[in-house]
Length: 184
Image 1 (cartoon, rainbow, N blue to C red):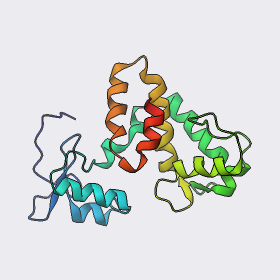
Image 2: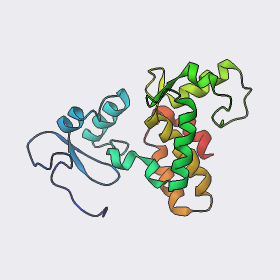
Image 3: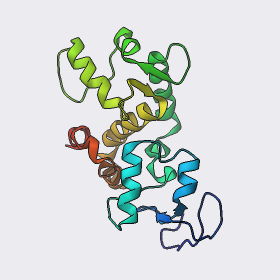
């Protein structure tokens, strides 16, 4: 997508109306708040906060779902590995796992720090993946954090990936502790 392009219609409904709109801070796409809400894109507290910030003109505002999906930057092999690792936790195939599933896995998710493998540390690690705090880790939550980790490793030799990964580091202020550990 050409970042110089100016959008005048909602990219979701393709309509130009008087409804309240917000711009994606990365690509410039415009979306009606009502379209985002009806499609479930403003379901979490963080998403609502980002939309409010975008309405107020904040640079740390909303990003469209396409721009927020860092997994698009992964190679096919990296994505396949990520799916296989997720399946190790998601034993019943319902696209999520809980803390008990997480504990049962014999090979923990690679840690950002070298902590002991005790239940308290595992709970802390689990909560890093559980971005919405609902005590389950969905495929989307897992994919987001793991994609950032993969991209961080790969970015050492690829300047474009490094720049893109750093853009995503500021999208989720609630997770700056995780991202600072990943990007340091």
